[in-house]
Image (cartoon, rainbow, N blue to C red; front, side):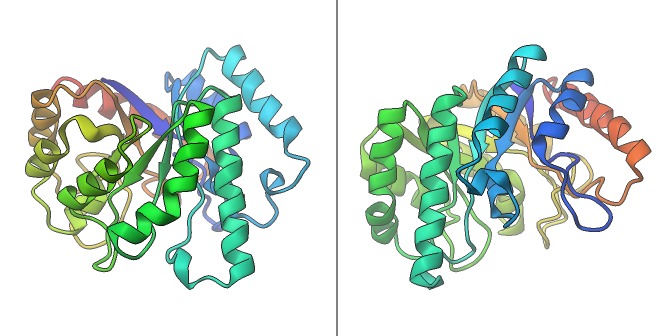
Length: 274
């Protein structure tokens, strides 16, 4: 296992603005965080160049930064809506286009896994909605990883995720386990992991106190990380532990953002010893 982080680790600012990932990659590399999850949710910003046909220089910049700083892009996160099926048709079509574009970006940047959110609805509705994207990702050499969510009307049970993945009967489909979401739902994380087994191909590592999706670093909430890591080792998980901890440092002054990366790396290295 390796420690990785979403590119959003220090992207959230005190004034609620977000720093684009191209400005952050050199900082992550400098502090030893070289395995990165590219957060394509950046496209949800109406001003993002990645939404436009002028995205090419941005993607080329990401590729250059990858080479310059010896980075590994282990996965990416696709844009999503809290309720895809409730969107107006033009909004839904636009979201579908962003997902399609994300798959293309993964192909161009050699990113093997794209994390997606199941839509609100049944397993059957998810299979029908995502089947064209699974076919597209297969052609691109990318695997889609369905994430367990955290609301009552969303897919969050481990057995539901397994059923969803198995319905596609494709090696290009797997599961991204979000520890924070599972903890909010009161799940037995060890039991979840043992249920997911070989379907588990990615993770979102974040802590909370069981009530809100706080996106804290491990040990700042109430998840039993030693038990979680032992479960991962028991199933032979050899993927990454990927931080999605963008709120623990949001209100820090800019001067303290880089030390926050350092702290995240230190905690990650400790996690790997459990």
